[in-house]
Image 1: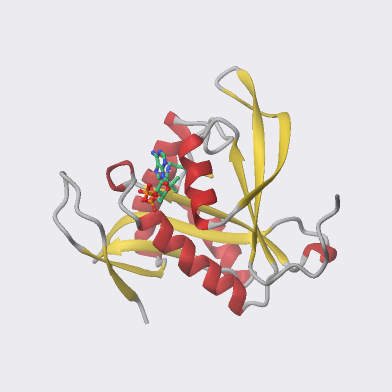
Image 2: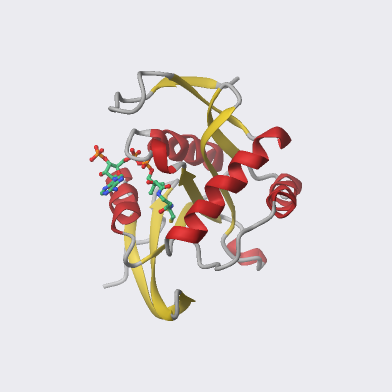
Length: 188
Ligand SMILES: CC(C)(COP(=O)(O)OP(=O)(O)OC[C@H]1O[C@@H](n2cnc3c(N)ncnc32)[C@H](O)[C@@H]1OP(=O)(O)O)[C@@H](O)C(=O)NCCC(=O)NCCS
């Protein structure tokens, strides 16, 4: 059942009900546009080339085949953002760890939608018996780092110059969220 959220007021938009629901194929023109705006204007995605709608549908299909959700925040048919998670790494020993991703349309940022999508992704990952959700964020993406830390993610690693975009090397921060409690004491 889709859940309805009333998103915070903004100067641009009146209060509107937003559903968080499973993506459907008809959403992919808008999902692709959101993705490509982030690709073009930020280092939030380490890719220089815009995606085609077919490529994003292929990504969705692959997530579905693996039993992972792709969720959208939508006002009727109009998509304001999307989120998903998938395997962190493909080796079997990583099977309790997933890596999440969320992108919100530029007009809808800062209005609570990312948080609502993330809550739902966390709930779905718990339902699948996962232990950890990882987020890999460009180290200069202050908004995303704050968004994730406010939610409860902890910074655990800083990888120097592993990314390259806009003619420069980029650092990647890994953050970790406990879907179920830690089993061991942290290493000192
Ligand atoms: C990062 C992103 C997913 C956050 O989603 P959002 O819907 O904008 O975030 P929310 O409205 O739920 O904000 C939750 C908290 O995040 C922080 N935050 C969100 N946007 C922020 C910004 N631009 N600057 C600083 N903090 C920000 C705030 O602490 C906010 O809580 P507050 O409003 O009570 O202070 C979204 O802004 C986005 O898609 N950005 C562009 C693409 C991107 O960076 N994706 C993430 C890649 S890892």
